[in-house]
Amino acid sequence: MQIPFQKFQGLGNDFVILEARDLPFDLDLSRLAQKLCNRHFGIGADGLLICHRESRGDARMQVINSDGSEPEMCGNGLRCFVRYLAGHEDQSFLIETGAGLLKAEFSQKKQSIRVNMGKPVLSPAKIPALGWNETPVVSAPLQVENHSFEITLVSMGNPHCVIEVDQNWSSADTLYWGPLLEMHPAFPERINIEFTQFLTPHLARVSVWERGAGATLACGTGACATLVAGVLQNKLETEAVIQLPGGDLTLFWDQNQDQVWMDGPAQRVFTGSYEEEGMIR
Image 1 (cartoon, helix red, strand yellow):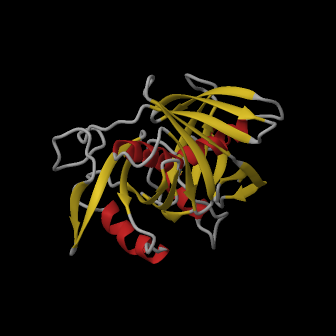
Image 2 (cartoon, helix red, strand yellow):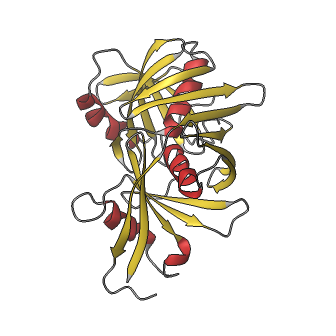
């Protein structure tokens, strides 16, 4: 059986998008995601997005990481998903996600997608994180091996741990500390990590370690969490640019409505079909 797909990327964070109606009802989606996302034996991607046309909004986005796990939300994936749905004119959408119904707008002129990423969650019980009772958790110490990190915890529908680092931080540091922090016993559902340099009140640079995907070029919800953490630490204003390895995102935290908005690009890379041997629809 051949499955049609489209591949999109948002700041280098790449996704394979499938229509749910093209898939057998009993298909193991975790296994399929691992096969499709494999960069040597599959299509290659950070994650799989499945478009469900039956939805409380215009469509429902289901996200599956490259390791087969299913996160609640993915910001870059959401921008790619909206670009997949959009035509060649300005359009607005209401997308059902694991984090609720989210508004999104596609601008043909700017070739960008603006997304309401929802309300940041700061309660450690809801992130979830163990060992803290106070809300919010800001610049709190966390011991990992022989090193103590100061962490700020934010959920944008999925859990994030923002850590300020200096200019000497390297990608090798992210690769070493990322998995140790992701799997730390304080985070029962694992966690995403943003190693962050706060450069000015309107600019931060982030190295990302994503739960279930590892080091990636960008993370939309991580950029949102970084903005919120920066504001809580008095390091950022409520509107700032977050620099990621794959490019920049513009973020705004509307504190009156307690909503975070993200603005950035997404692009179709190619389309094709994937042949799954032995699959019968």
